Length: 412
Image (cartoon, rainbow, N blue to C red; front, side, top):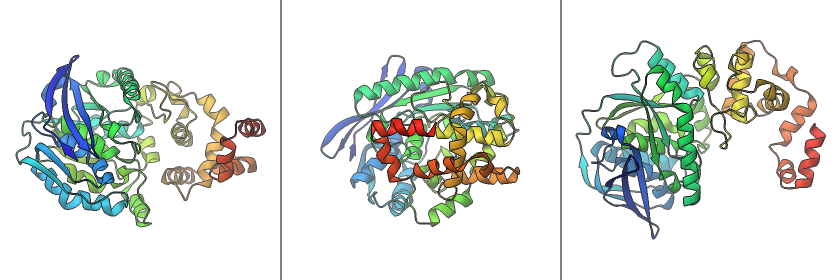
């Protein structure tokens, strides 16, 4: 893979850094952009963002990657010596490759002073804000900026039409979320990109690298970036990875990857990795802004609302229910819809999958801690339905419109 010298341009009030990419016989363009009012943050002198953002597809293709521009000396050394071999060891689909560049820089952006984290309105980002902004925090570690990146979390496009649709969704979500940063007095910086077009395997496969690439694009302004953890404590991650399972979410590897993605002047920090998702939910349940702005929904079609019945919504609502806080969040959840349409089945799924999925284990542990017997909340039919959902019969029924309609009537 060849990443050509990056070029700077202005378009529609945004500063754009773009580079031509040659890979597997194809020529494409990758870009990162930021509103001109934040242009001082953009590191246009290096190609660090392209190197990190395109590393995963290069490893999947088994192509050495060369950058015609300048990259961080520390980053390039760490990629070759540590990160690339480690990722290839963890995932057999990734090939050990060599990264090179025309030039390296060992100075970085020494004038950078911002301390940031991403803000999506979710449990993890609110926890990082609570811990590093609302609490007393030393200068240099206290949050000064919030960021919102379009690098895959809003969807993975198959073509240019889908990319533009996802870009509109990203911009609409930014408009919906910006009230909270304005309320607490933190600048809210959006970064638009098409790097996710190079990641057809899905965002979870490459989220850490995609997010870090967007932060590296802004490293002239960012000194420290907190990457909110995936909601699993170190202990649980060690247990999971010790079972020799391939990580289905690259964020499970963040404690190892992030130090190797840091540069001479930008420090990446894996934040909140001593807390599981349920503990984080408990922590922010009394944070009043969260009752008005929390958005955890896993439904990609939603913008400013939580559907209240998807797995991510249910996970949050059940946790809030266990600690007696669910009604405080009626402004952002349809609690009655959750109780009517999803609660019992989700509890059954939690019990059935408690030893297979870490998030379910967190909920069961919290229920036991609070003296709640979840098994009493469901009946045998709920448990049967939950078990069936993981089997071939469920897949067969879902693929048959007639059987799907009959199944819905039966379970009603």
